[in-house]
Image (tube, rainbow, N blue to C red):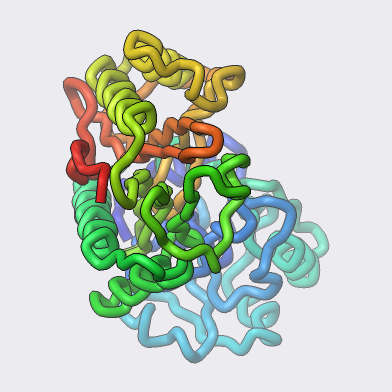
Length: 380
């Protein structure tokens, strides 16, 4: 555990008048423990903690009190993962209530999203006097700013994702299906012992003048690759406890000039936006307008999507889609150490769905692309 991370958490707990924090397997669990080798189930399937939680009963828990004492409770299968930590209690799932009663004595306890109902019910069983507070967002302020270790991991993950997609592009073959292309991404991960994807990846085939090309987001994994097919990649890998998220569109064959120039306009908008970022001054709600400014200058504003809401992307870190989101409704000034994904999109009806998505680090003086895939590469 990183001592400064724990001390800052305790300060937040005291400010919120909490005596303790209890998190099941989740991003906050990993953040507190700095347990990057522990594989927990990401929220990618319910997208930013939606209406369901697949981990109804936890396999691991961490409890921290304001005295700086922390305790881990986990099932026997995980005991080796936490062997270097102190105060580790091994328990079977159906005995966790009894196990936790050995170290939870405080009365005002914050709980997170993962297994929330279970945590609340179990704490009441331990002591009916315990009051619980929903605290999934308590650590957001800390997690927004990445330290050097986190940035290095995310830099490596971004490079890995660049390389993975280039591998797929180099192995595209006419007649292969969208499923085949997506399997190449999976096989590349297997070959490099990557634990999982950040979310279900897409290599979206959209062949010009077909039914699929009439709608921006309809894809079929059975679609076969032919000349005149745009391929919209959306892929991220999870490694060393952190996620990547990456997007590009490439074109199989010779692209129409409208589409090809549109791609370069979208890339120019992305690069222009990043060049204008000033840490501690630029607001998230300004970012989409910067992309739109450049795209409009190049004559492609009619094709840029989500202009009304200015939807552009999200923060990224331990989980893939983290707050704050990037859109016109969010009032948040960018700060050094933040990492976000900007993903402007275009749609050319009957031709192409287009995306450019990059991981971007806010530095002391500006912003830096962590994803460095060749921006001139479009026609395969």
